[in-house]
Structure formats: structure tokens, C-alpha cells
Image (cartoon, rainbow, N blue to C red; front, side, top):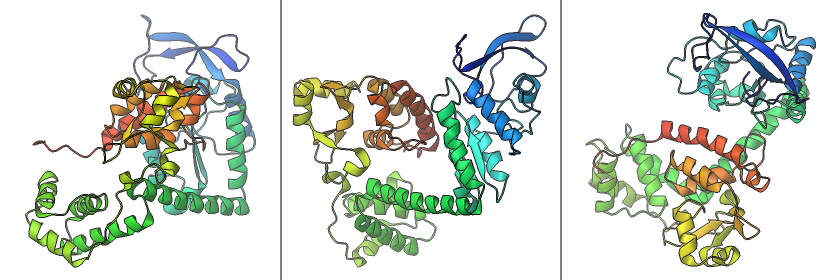
Amino acid sequence: MDGVIRCLLRWPDAPEAIELSITMHRDAYPKAFHSEAPWDEDGTSTQSEYFSRAGVEWARRLVERGADVRWATTWQHHANTYFSGPLGLPELPVAVSGEAGGARTSGVWKARQLGAGFPGRPLVWVDDQPDDWLMTARRPVDRALTLIYRPASPMTGLQEPDTAEIDEWLNLASTVEGQQELRDRRRREVRRERARFIRFNWGSPEVYRQRNRIRNALKTEFPDEGFTAAIIADHIVRGGEWTRPAIGDLLERWHASKEVTVKRVVEVLGRLDLPELPNPRRVLPELWAATLGPMIPQHHATKLLGMTDSELEQAADDLRALRLLTVDEQAYYPGWQISDGQLVPGLQDVLRMLRTGSDDAWRWAAWLYAQDGRGVRRVRRFAVGRADSVLQDARWVAAEWRATALPEDPDD
């Protein structure tokens, strides 16, 4: 509803919007994920609401052609109470309902319920704050027949380019041949994502295979310590030492069980005859270009920006510029942030927001250069003056990072 059919931006007299006066009642108002409305003394609240004309007309067309259209909104059954009739829609089934149930966001709350339903059926979820948990919640066989779609601008709701893109997917999902095409696309996408994941985390398939070899050997030795095995394997293939002091520090930091001793770990590693592997963060810029974009060393970045070394370093410290440091303390700057001799506007606010979720500038760079849900790299939005939309996405991913962060060592 909100950000999809109901506009988050009030824009009277715009032809793209439908303006309606809606009166809500305190005793018929959603509780989960909603703040209180500005109630009058009689317990009502009347406001001018704005709805996307393209979105409303598209929903009507879906209903007319017999599609199974349901409300998946925090308004729950109140969406029918206040919106269906005035928008010319029939009373629609409600796909999500109940209390928050510990879900940290409305997106997770919806994704859990949507993922548990509709087995074996194509599913399109259109939401301004969707969560990828839906893909995890759906059966693997159904994931190719799942589309999670976020409108290009939740401020104005669905527009014709949005509905055209969804309709194209629905047309494919409506035929046996089309569903096979979607499954083929999903397989290709999974392979690409896996390759990108390996490149970003380990630099090359060779290093990734070696990492798994180390992890599996340690898991065989310590069957109940899979997490510790992964930590040690990641440490080694990223160039970390596996001397006794280094391994001892890792085991203490990550609170390994008493069963995992330095002596036994070193013995396992010694039997593997480990080759010398390149540290992924020693091989910039070539190796990282596919994941982070073209990289510019500091001396070249200063020339492009007309800055001194100290001025550029200060810009990086202030998060006006994104700087990546290798293990050799060499500074590189993703090239996309420099345009016409200037740092792109809006970057500082985005980096500040990302920092609330993670201190890892490499992680910020990878997220910014990655494609969004529409297949467009987020950094492209800076070039077309849409830094505000990147900031909105950054707010949500930072919250996700915080929610999934490993606990810090209390003795650190």
C-alpha cells in the first residue's frame, strides 16, 4: 500500500495522482508498524491522501483479468476498510496479518508470511521496503517463480515503467515455457552471484577452494566447531599468519571451545602442505575492478580533483570521499565517485549512514557498486542526481548489517 499505491509524497493537482479525502477511526486502525494518527476529539482523523493513478489502474486491470491480487500491507484488513472502495477495487483478500511477532521490520514480517504461503505458484511481491528473506522463506523450487519488486520511487508509488516491468514478468510466469525461462534465468543469476561472492571475499576460485580445504580439514578434526573452522580458514587465505601465537589469538577472540587447542590446529594445518596464496587485498586494482569498479590510486585522484594529498585525506576522513586501504596501507579511490573534477554530491550522507551499520569501507564500496533490484548499479544514481534514493536504501541495509553483525569481543 504505502509507497506502492498510496504515495508517500503529497502532490496536489498532479495528473499522476488521485486525491481522496479519507476519514479513519481510532478503533479501526492498525497497530503493528504504525504510529498513531492525529486523532480529533471524536476519535477520527480526516486527511487528504494521494494515490498513484498508474498503480491503481494497474491493480484494477489485474483484478479484471482474474489475477489473485491480495493486500500485503501493514494496514492489514483496514486496507479494505479505507482504500478498496474509494479506489474502485473490490474487497481483496489479505495476505499478511497479526502482530509484529518479533520481526525487526515490516519487510521481514511480510516476507515470513508470504514465504509460508503459495507453494508451487508464481508470486510477485511489490513493496517499498521489501526484504530478501522472502527468497529464503520460499521453497528452493519456487524461488525462480518469485519476483520482489520495489517501485523506482516510493515517494510517488508505482508508475507506468514499473507496471510494464512487472507485467512482462507476469506474462512469462503465466506459461509453462515462460516459467522454464524464469528458472533458467535464476540458475544463471545464482551462478553469477556465486562467482561475484567468491571474487569479493576470496579474490579467486583457487583461494576459495583452498579456504574450503582448510575449513573442511578443521571441521573433520573438530566436528562441533564449524564456525571456528571457518574463521581460521578465512584468516589464513586472507594472508593471516598461522603461527601458534596467531592461532591462539584467534581461538581466544572467538571463544573457541577447550577442545580446540593451538597444538591440534597447527598440526592439522601442517598436514595440509599449504601453498603460498595471494592476499585478496594486495592485488588492487585489477582483481577488484569487477566488484568495486575502476580503482584510482591516491596520487592520480589528487590530480583529478585538484587537491593536495592532505586535502584528499581529510575528505576521506570526513567521509566526503570513499577511500580503501590495502594491507600495505596503500590508498585507492573508486573512480565512480569523481565526476567532472568533483566528488559526487550526496556521497557523504550515504557513507555516514552506511557507517552506522558497519565500519568496513570495503563493504560499503561493494554494496554501492552492486546492482539494485532493477539491475542498475547504485553508483549510477549519483550520476543522475538521485543520491537521496541511495541514502534511503543505505538506511535499510545499515539496519540489516547491524541486525546480523557478529557480537564483539567484550575484552576487546
